Image (cartoon, rainbow, N blue to C red; front, side, top):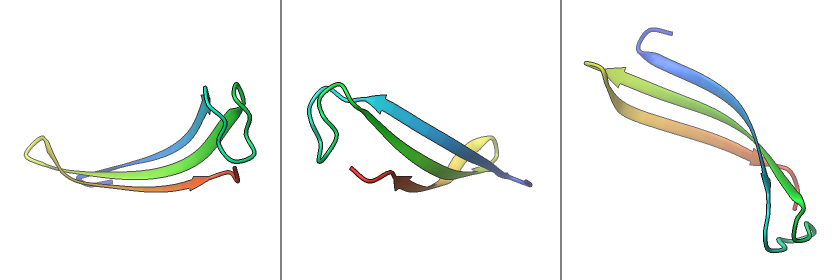
Length: 55
């Protein structure tokens, strides 16, 4: 969109140490929206909004 790239990302990770209710070896999941703005072929601004599933 113009000079902005918009990404919608679903991220998952297998964790090594327990975090909250997720045991070691469990999976953590998050959803991201990322906005990257360019000027003259270079990134000038980047915004990321994340939402993790409860852990």
